Amino acid sequence: MVAPGAGEPTGTVQFAADGHPIGQPVPLNNGTAVSPAVGLDAGEHVITANYEGDEKFAGGSDSLEQEVAAAHTTTTVSSSPNPSVVGQPVTVTATVSPVSPATGTPAGAVQFEIDGEPGAYVTLAGGTASIESRHARPWHPPGEGPVPQRGPELRHQHVGRREPHRQQGRHQDRRDQTRRRCRPTASR
Image 1 (cartoon, rainbow, N blue to C red):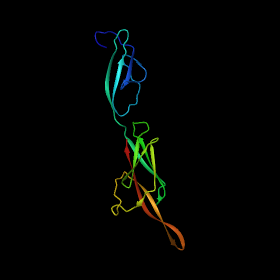
Image 2: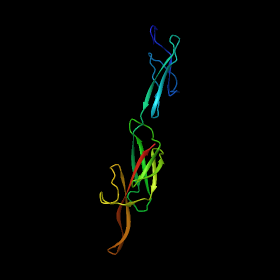
Image 3: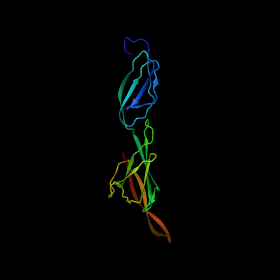
Image 4: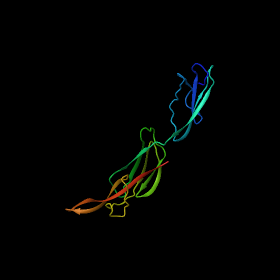
């Protein structure tokens, strides 16, 4: 209200985000209107409130810039079967979840990395992406072999190689441990 007007404005306010209406016009209550909740994508947005006026007061509008940051996520990696044997198909799954207060189901893709080599990008479906691999290489204790050391974010897939041998006249399998490393890397 601009002086010398008297009384309280009535009528409605139409809110908009980036020029698109946010719901229906909202009636003023004691001179105030509150926008319906709206979900905005990450980035800069212009929010506008347009007062449509009434029989005593002329309409007017105002706007502001609203910056929306991308939601944080967590990515969890799992494999099945674990452990496995050399040559056995292993399904590696990445599950991407929003961190509160964010909600919804993340979209986009996950790039899988196996033994330090970038692999396929897989599109998320319902927040998960999976690949199947038969790739494995021998495991060496930390610092004692050609497997590059990685940070704690890696999950390890244990793969056993079956070697037949005889023990007390019976045929048994002995597992010579090998390790497989998988890590998803996020992408948009």
